[in-house]
Image (tube, rainbow, N blue to C red; front, side):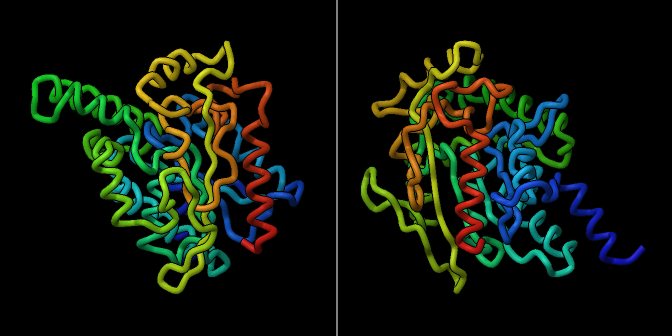
Length: 312
């Protein structure tokens, strides 16, 4: 078995790939990589994290990869795992794949920013969806209720990490061990500010402005975009709506139940007030999104078309 075939099989074991076919609207030059947020998984019990989104992109010509990422961990460690998978895909391509268009949901946006900053040679563009770049008050609430080292904190850590490890196991990602504290540390006010100080590219310099659309990082040009929603309640049949209705009470600004409108801003802001809760951009739960808003699958196709027209 030659080395190229071995590399291809290794990449396939780490990343679920969907090849281009049918239309051409989403046929980007560089493959699209969908980077999940917390509770990251590719498929569990036949349900995809990105519900019907890869096939929607495929139908318009895109090649899509869904990496295996730890359910709960820091974006740096998640980012290093992503880099390893991107390198394997690139090696398996025999030179045809050089860069990737990263599209990250929630913490997946922070993970994508990490990769963009430490390995810009791998990245053509980063698009973040409902990502709390400037933190989420929910992280401050959790760390306040269950501080690290206290009885409540230890109990919370044990339970949360067990849930994360179960998600990893069910998603055939057995090598990952969850670290809920590492994840929370990025999304409280202090942690988010520290992360933005380390990686400021694309972050608005004003409280609710937008960042540049293009940046040069290590001699590599990267395009940056974001979109988000501000509707915790979007579909009466969606079981996530009641949860987000409660969590939204922790905010002093319009939000999706996890991410504030201004906190979601990164690069060029495509739109920040879609009628979407925090799970809707992944077309969850089971496609039960608002009937009065652009369907998430269409938004991905439109963004892929934007990147295609830019030569990406």
